[in-house]
Image (cartoon, rainbow, N blue to C red; front, top):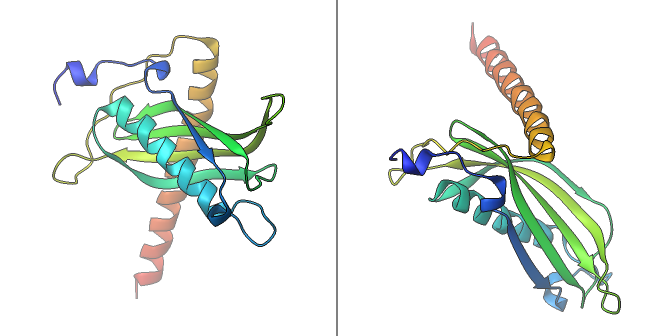
Length: 171
């Protein structure tokens, strides 16, 4: 990547909003959306955020948190909003919310909150650096601090798993 591609970017540069209509094929026998359908929409929204931020394809590394808060029913309009919280080397933490829109009042009800980590890949499918995040507001700083804490915790868990696996493979 050239220097212009790695220049710091504002979280607002990659904000993504999507709207979906919950159709019968998206629902279970109770008439509520399959969790997997909502997760797919969330993953797509996050992928767009990641691509907008790094200017290239990025892939889901893991879902750090995903919580279903309220049901989504057949016929509902849902609004997904994604934004980047932090950039770390070749990875990014992306937050996505899914809200149900009331047909009469157009008020929104939060239904799903998710945190995903995406990794930027180059054309040879190797990890590639992502542009740093330009933190401009108090909210940007708060989101980054929370993401940095989760990132450190994840790295510690990964190190512990590797050490445990190495211990188990030793004679």
